[in-house]
Image 1: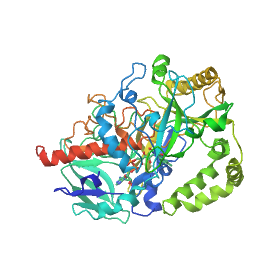
Image 2 (image 1 turned 180 degrees about the horizontal axis):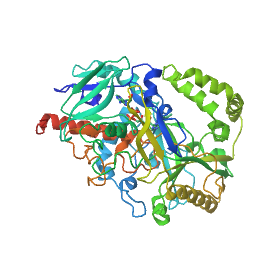
Image 3 (image 1 turned 45 degrees about the vertical axis):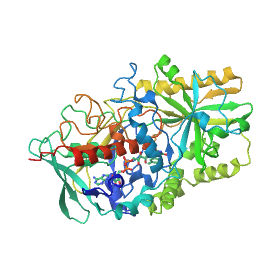
Length: 506
Ligand SMILES: Cc1cc2nc3c(=O)[nH]c(=O)nc-3n(C[C@H](O)[C@H](O)[C@H](O)COP(=O)(O)OP(=O)(O)OC[C@H]3O[C@@H](n4cnc5c(N)ncnc54)[C@H](O)[C@@H]3O)c2cc1C
């Protein structure tokens, strides 16, 4: 958003908790309490630093489908206040921000003679394409543009502690800032945008409780509710009769259909016609490299090694590196096995593929972020996350397995065996690290925290950017949609500042 607003006649102040380099004390501010099914420490799933979590993201990009924006009578609280066409122009601009190819996700635009879809009945299973960003590290790619813009001031190591408002809590007047060295100050503005992630946004709204004890935007007790992530699970094995010739489209590869070649990856997705008939939420299958499908790949040791690798690739000192190194050493067996499998894979010609089910989570008001009892370095309550899946979420993954199995058998190209037991779970359920829904968007203030312009209901000048505003999250990774919404919000704020009525801050 800051980059979009460079060169304007108004001033922008970008307030960032971290610095350019990883900083352990700042990163610790992302800590939180966990309850429920969520198994991953919060401070390991978000990066406190300039450029945010794009320092470690993997770059998988796909817009939500038109189907994801529609209300579905079998999914409570589903439906966006607008359709996909409203975001189309912004998705096109977001592609460039993520340094990926043209804004088409039509399969025929990406298929090549040696990368063709599996011949499955399209009423049951469709092949979907993701484009894979280099991945763009936003801090590196866009720092220069932001730092050199005369109308943008960037404050690093500046933590927003809470939002001050007029007495009636209708207009934000300033944010209160604290640094870990003890400095305190305020920044006032005409418009405020919280772009702090799906856990921190509700935490800040709830913690801003001076004028209204309930917090901001909390008139209808919705702030922090409807937390959604993308449940992931190794759910099935696909056995193919003629595998190597069939599966190139489903591995990350450079497509030569566009210039310059763009990295893409195919997924097997349950068709919308079947979703409606079966009353399911979305589910798609990724076909990861075989060495990633063993339980050891998801062990603590391998995860710690991957985290060290992500940090080094982003040219950061790894967060809590002594602890992570100890975790790698303690998990040396799993690390070695995974390494050996990875090396051996190039030499094996596979006929079996362990599929990762990437599910949608339906909106659930009991799945939520609240203020916890532990305090951070500023004495403010940390977030407490209670991630709750619903029956439909796990049923949909189970049923998706069965539908894929029927489609593969009907096509006569192999068979599918399920890895899910009768309780609906197999290997450990994982999260996609996608924090969505906690300040959901709606037309009706009794059903959402922000309006379709991402403005907090009841507040004249406080906006939210990020996946916290998603009413539903489909199955695709969220960042391309986050960027599309941020570009739309940047346009809206530019328009308000240049053409809109003045905001009354008295
Ligand atoms: C390992 C991993 C892999 C991922 N891979 C993918 C992928 O392949 N595709 C995809 O689409 N998504 C992926 N994601 C998710 C993606 O990283 C997030 O969706 C995206 O970064 C969210 O953007 P954001 O700007 O909303 O939040 P963030 O990127 O987290 O940025 C929030 C910013 O706010 C700052 N901040 C927070 N609190 C405060 C405060 N109180 N005061 C001041 N500043 C504050 C932070 O320092 C940070 O700069 C991945 C995530 C992880 C962890």
